[in-house]
Length: 297
Image (cartoon, rainbow, N blue to C red; front, side, top):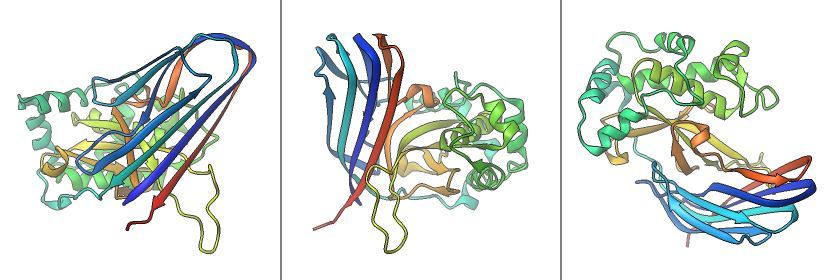
């Protein structure tokens, strides 16, 4: 499947901003099932400094600095991406979660060391005993890893309400657990905390999900949104480097409607845009996203 993605971010300021330094995770990454054909970033006002690099996780990161006074900042990211659905190991045929946990500790190759990093707590996903307790209902002794993980995301989907007004990017995981509501970022963090609490490796994935309008209704421009899910380390998933991506918001493994932008330990590693600025007073933020399928042939 081929897509055109446009992500537009606008900041408005009540007072002039004299200087800003920002980084953006907006260019999709390459994966075994995703090819980034083209990616562009346009910034207005034109920045004095622009640089791109790969971070520790292999994500494409753009740094820019605007050194002129401005009342508005507009960041437009566009990309053309080709996606295929990742192959999914047979869940009941994966090794037990206890065996996977033990194997994780003995891996010596670079890929194994990287996987172990994602078993550790991180700034937005601290060790949360209640999350580990929540996971145990799915991870019974000797249960196949992927079967248990699918059961976990199914329970999150059923037990937690999707409510965009209930949380912010700063809402602690403990609060999400207590109020049983949140958004995709919260559900990904919860699943990651649950898995790490059992000694398993899980990483945060940011990107986009193609959404389709109801039958006979036009697609609303700008109405798509960024999305988030998680990936669990599963040795049987050799075609995808040992990782299986799961979406607790929609209770499913990812398919060819999912576009990956970045991976990290949690949201803070892959924030779409963040930075510091001088001046500005009160500010407003508007974000619009379009994910359009490109017809083949």
